[in-house]
Image 1 (cartoon, rainbow, N blue to C red):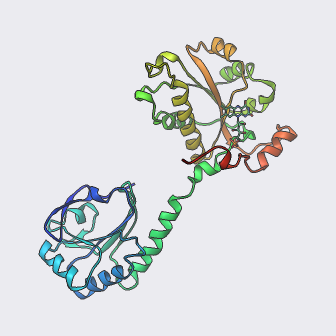
Image 2 (image 1 turned 90 degrees about the horizontal axis):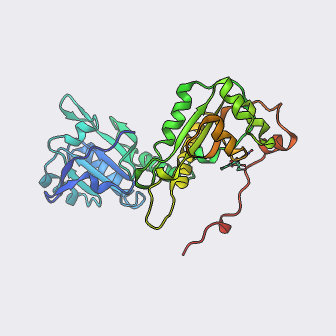
Length: 320
Ligand SMILES: Cc1cc2nc3c(=O)[nH]c(=O)nc-3n(C[C@H](O)[C@H](O)[C@H](O)COP(=O)(O)O)c2cc1C
């Protein structure tokens, strides 16, 4: 996602104002061509009227010098910060310069400096209210649980259709971006998708995991103590780190419309022998497309349809 350029502007008092000052909060950054003109005044007045509704997080930028923006601010009692971008550095970085002139534009920037919404060639009348509506919507949407987390399910109704290696590797790529203690990256993956490999693996599955035999790929996840960050007090983070990585993999699969279902029901010793694994197998992950149910037991068919079950939050969290 495009980010707000990391430039240093001047404020109304001629002091440096690095745009990193905006990080950590949602902001509306609007660019206007010239302080004091009719359109720019109307725009400023409209934003000013909604200042409180924006929580005060408005900043207005123009190529005017600091003295000019200071008098513009005073004359109209503007409550928000005005910044001077005489070299049009910010404007250029935001592709808001055309034929040497600044293009009237507005940006909603989030706490990580990501540009979430943009308007170019803004028509002033009623614009501030439209921006406010989107601003509120973005802040509200970001407060939700991530939709991919909400959607992810450990489904069992897998189609046998093969999954391209590129997609399987993309899952591992996402897992490999997980954080880990000392950045040790203790996770290891063996992607089993050949007929012979899968047949070998099927022999290690517990009876209840019959459904996983329909998966076109199974990712074997393992680690070993030597790969851990080895803290002095013997805490072992290899399992923890690998668990985070698997979490990332499951979310990536959900985005790609694939089912990725972790499995603990297998014979770990046999698996190790069969595949020559040097480490501890933590989980298998059955990967496939969803949508074939005729091999499922009544119980599993029902599980496929019912909403997910979770204890009440009050049972698993306390705030002190
Ligand atoms: C480490 C781990 C091991 C699991 N082992 C199995 C398994 O052997 N067989 C199975 O059918 N499901 C297995 N599951 C899936 C869980 O049953 C499932 O995640 C849980 O019921 C919650 O459902 P949801 O993932 O759809 O929210 C496992 C999940 C995890 C994280």
